[in-house]
Length: 174
Image 1 (cartoon, rainbow, N blue to C red):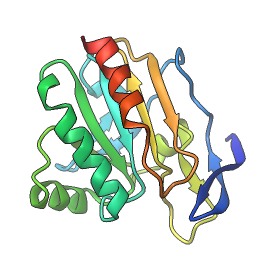
Image 2 (spheres, rainbow, N blue to C red):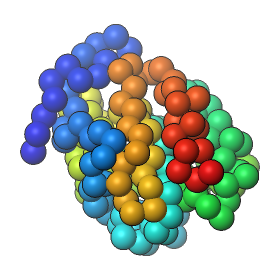
Image 3 (tube, rainbow, N blue to C red):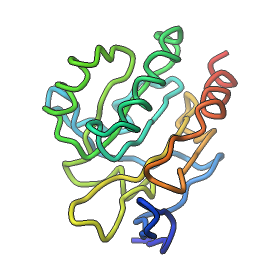
């Protein structure tokens, strides 16, 4: 498995990311995550339409909470044209509780706790922390599963570029 040393900082400290650095034009890699019903979800089981993968370390932290709310609110008008996912290593039970208590309705949650395949295949699994976490990132895929936008946020505690991600979504959804 590829490792990218010093690819990200977390509270100013450098960390290695496991997996490749994906870029626009790459075919989105497969993964196996759990949804809130504890069903195994792979890339092929997501709808064949544009998709947003908003990757966060943990929904129970302020920036991750804000990121999920921002995309949930901004993408509500694309309901039938776009599949939106928040992916973290939180347990599916915690993700479901968060979405219920925070009234998240446009973002589906996927937990990478099963085998960390999303983190490894998308290059966002942080190595060297006391517990596994995913680095903050945003991926936009077209209906054919090709990445049209990829952002690896350099500092895990910082926000992604919402404007750029939303512009990438608008470009493929219309």
